[in-house]
Length: 301
Image 1: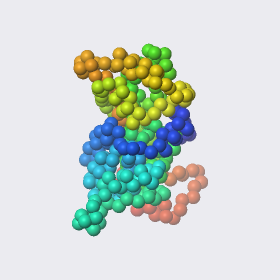
Image 2: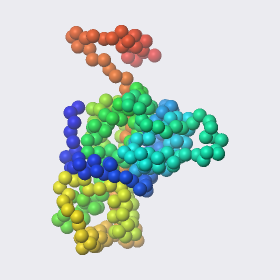
Image 3: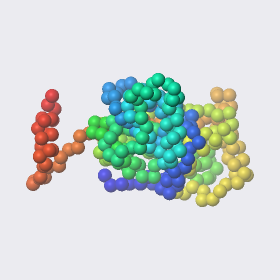
Image 4: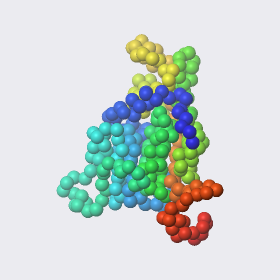
């Protein structure tokens, strides 16, 4: 599949956001990760090695849940900065006097180059990637054959109330557009994954004030739209924004609190055994031929 960049994401801005150090995990990311971790009970494969892609922003509490679910598995942390990786390691590290420390258990190390883990976990990362297909290709390379990917991201209905406020005021978009789950499924197949399973849910969060709402949004992400306002905003504009949010988003049924919708997409896909291409004249190695003969014809048991 040829690479097609998201039309409403500015790649340099996305790269800056990915490289930005995270002080901690947003509450929403932790909640999404908790819901995604609960889905692992339906997966029979017990990985002996797994990778956590961006655990600090994606959820340190979830990192602990995953380490507890797979206590004997090797864990690889993938972070842009060494201090971020150290934070993830310390979040599940046991005191030196704990007897369990001397038993064979979870390890944390740099991710090997290719085909080394049976599970790759990426929570709330994909929707802000400047080149999502390239990111999927990285995940595909990291996974072993028959390994699986678990990911989550924001969907198109996210922040629809905020978009309505900006539109009513004649301002530009408050953020880039989010991809539909069916398009994510198509990209997964194009990246070499198989049997993608996608589902979604919407949650509505309420806030006591516009200032608290904006604080949450700033922790979750940034406006990566190429046509976003090109310079800094002032205090007067910030006051106008908070007043508009209070006016338009106050929900009488919620006691006057401000409501905001988030569409959450969950995805799961497998890395299948590669298929050999057979042309009119093809050369097949002896090793590949031996593997095919050992597996037998498709559907054989």
